[in-house]
Each structure stands twice: as C-alpha cells, then as structure tokens.
Length: 162
View 1: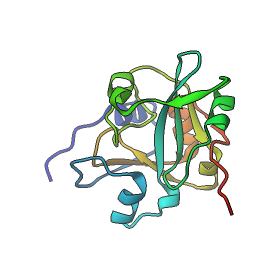
View 2: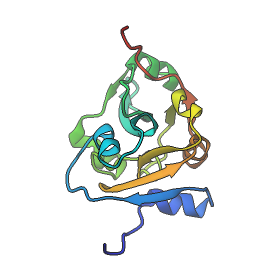
View 3: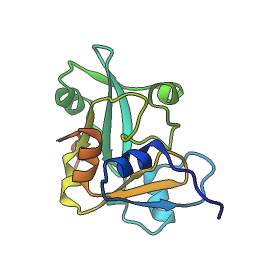
C-alpha cells in the first residue's frame, strides 16, 4: 500500500501529543460505520460516527454517536443549548467541515465547532472514529477525543423501543 497522507485530525492529535492509532483500509465510496466495522471484524458498538447539525440560531455542532445508534435531536439541541437542531444536508458537509461524507470527524474541522460525544462512549477504553478521509480510522480513548476537540460528553441517543 502506498504511503498514506496525514489528515488534519492526525496532525492535531500529534501536535497535542494525544495517544491514538491509525488504521487504513480499502474504501472508495461512502459506507456507514456499522458496515465498515463488520467488514474489518471490529465491534460496531465501539465505532462512532460524526453527525453535523445546525441549530435554530444558525450555529453548527458536531455530535459523535455510536454507529449503531440513532441520535435524539431534542437531546442534541438541549446539549447544545438550542431550541432545536437539524441534520446538516449531505451536500453542505464538506463546505462546513472540510471533510466529505464518510470521512467526517470531529477533530480538525475547518472551524472549532462545539463537539458533543455521546456518553455511551465513556464505557469504552477505546473507540473508533473516522480519520478524516474515506479508508481511514482513528482509535483513541473517549477522553482523548474530548481533549482533542474541547468536547463535552452528553446523552444523545434516541431511546430504543423495546
């Protein structure tokens, strides 16, 4: 495999001397976090996706939740101190974050948007997030992700119907 370029996320983690490891895999188009975890033999519960939202105020927020979960927009709004939030349209992701769909990570976006990590992450020693481009993952502790993004842990998941 050819030498891989570092992403903004990797550079920031290295500059801040935050512990992490990087994994590269073959991927040429968007695939969701659960499918990637299954393809690579990883625990889908430890794989987290980044969802970008816009609040009623017009501000942008990054929400990092388990790939297997759905986000509760009311909980996300409450965490962000907004009356409501809505998912950012896919066509706007790159313009707002600098990352493409499937390669979006809360670390190293174009701007320092507020980041909220679902509290479910805190039960794991290590979680997996996108590395900032398709075919790249970063393994790090939830605490490291919060330190890298100046993020906050919050309850973000929709309640599953039993």
